[in-house]
Image (cartoon, rainbow, N blue to C red):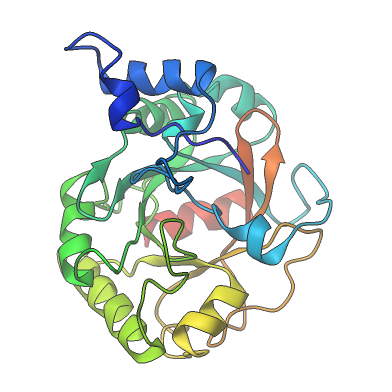
Length: 276
């Protein structure tokens, strides 16, 4: 698990007014350790892809580096700060996703630098939204995502937006929703994203969360690409509804940024996937 760097409201008052949020986040990550509320709950905005994977699914050693027929990637959020993109590129990483938004209350202060930095070294890049179904509706959050960096264009270098739907780090694992209500929320997000961008969003999730919180719903597998989270040497069972995956987050302790992923195809196939 990586440290949180969201700014605790009390700690933030220790700094002079006008200090950029990104600088505050970096300083806090270096000197104060994981940011959390007084009861130990992560601060809103600090969630990121895979935040609950180790706690719920555990991990086993993953084989590092690119695999034949697959293309190495990474995902980043505010806690990684200024990313060494040339180092990643030279190590074989060819694509990246950056957290853009969470709920309707948070935008990543590093988003622009991370998103453009990945592209500047030649990577194909995209953005993701960390869903909080207990705070607002799916369509509302899709609009917030698209309006704050989550759009898509068929330029061949922009990947489709991702709905990161996984364990709630702030409370009940399923955000207080029944499986039926969760499926409705997800559908509302996906439908709005498609109507706004013309592209089906990718779903990032873990198989065990999907089973518990959607009741093994099978209805999205034919339209929405799957990004599955499993920290192991093999991808394992996929969520209900999918017979294959597009991307696999296989570790949170890889080189340079921690979170490493594999696209299930060649670089040319990745370009085709981006172009739609």
